[in-house]
Length: 194
Length: 194
DNA sequence: CGTCTATTTGAATGTACTCAAAAGCGGTGG
DNA sequence: CCACCGCTTTTGAGTACATTCAAATAGACG
Image (cartoon, rainbow over all chains, first blue to last red; front, side, top):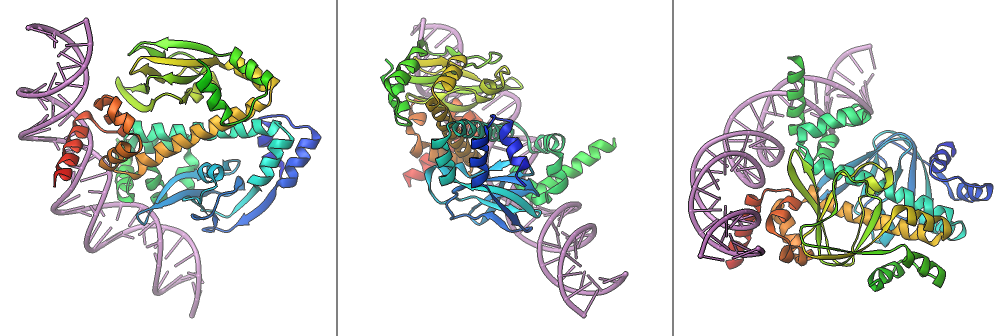
């Protein structure tokens, strides 16, 4: 059950037996059905989630419109850092798009680890750094590229998104309306036929 | 000279005398004239910069067009994490918009600190977390808000940007063309007059 | 003072948007 | 297993807003 998350950690730092045990002890496995919420806006996000299987999207509401801004598949870490760090209620929702098995642990347990085993500060640092890289990439995508190019890149770089995620969520992720994505797809198809 | 950066560090963790000395020892103070580059694309970003005074912008080139995506003022940290972490050449340019005094230190020195004094892993973690928060915010801004709203928010949340930064850089930061920003400003002025 | 760059203004264009409706698809219950 | 219902995707027509291209004005700096 905890093989994947341990592997993920161990690709970052090596843990001695004490550290590994201490870490495993704070883990909790959870199952979510399709459409269930792993995190709901208004909650304080005091946990870190690692996805064993399934997939989920993150979105928040702006004037009643759902704004999807990330998809998570197996082997990926998630937390709403803003809420996690500041203790403020989150505006993010994390919703299972397929049945999910996740491993999660609480902030307070993690902070205890930070204080007991400094190696975990390093884990935290590297996870934060990776989170930063991933948001930066998203940012560049949103600022540099036309919607059509964004979709083409998504197809080549994250095919699982295009294959497993409903189109209107992808549209939201790309920053366009479902109708526009539909037209873009049509354009791409026509271009290919030639 | 190092007062500000030490204060910034100490707002994160407390350092004992050894740690503080070790840290100060890796610091280097540098001056940059207006328009000079603190970081140039193609270089490997192997340093972290802390701005003592002045301001700078970060931009990269897309098809020959400069894409400005952040402004830095005094008391702010900067590094191109992508390049810093992966060792790949950076695509980012950091250019002084006013004369700048900065304090910087090298990656290799920092990693030595990481290994000698675990407290710096924590510093690194928290800086990475903050960098993440700031990129996330930028992201939300870019995805949620109309250009006009973005500019209004910028005026109220970061007035120093509007006051000290040339307009065409702000336009680029907002993701629009200088002409559009000019028209937006006009619209805002007209609205205020009523 | 003069040059170079930044900003403003104008007119025409393009692309995604809105609104509306039709077609397609998946899941549920009979 | 099929029929139906609801949700997703597609298509169409018209609109809005930033963009492009071009030119004029304003401002900064030597």
